[in-house]
Image (tube, rainbow, N blue to C red; front, side):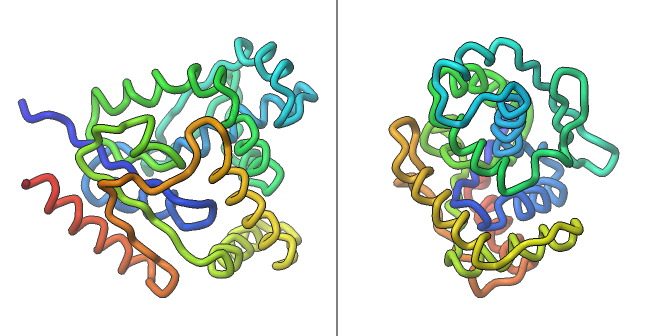
Length: 226
């Protein structure tokens, strides 16, 4: 039996990791794992408990009450189940983005989720996206991609996404959130966002989704055959 292939896609907020990773996984028949959604789900639970993203004691106190399941619909989409309730639609807000970045700095949260993420890669061909997949979660992944884009382009994309959901947003606010998230992710003490030494860098600023998907699939095929 051939070993399972793990594809790690890291990069900053708004680079299109989830959209691209989902497409690539679907077209290759791999399991898609959105780790950002997992951290957003933890952040959502903390917000329900009145615990802030920097409240280390509160997060440590509440983490054992978090029961997360990942379910996949017939369309292959990942649904986040928190303590029995589907919170997939509730975690995709700028507020939950900041919460996710905050809770991700807490060692108790990372330890809690690490085993879940690695077990999926040990039992499936996976495309997993996040901030530290290729550097921490799956350091031995067969394929590592660092997907990025300029802050301005990422803010424009996030605005369109939120507007399509019927939310009222201002570009300046979204841009500020993007820059703030980058600062938090790249300078956190635990597993900061960085490009793995052996990762292939893909800058999607001037590329269409189809172009990015095609380039990443080509990289995967090349690495898988090596």
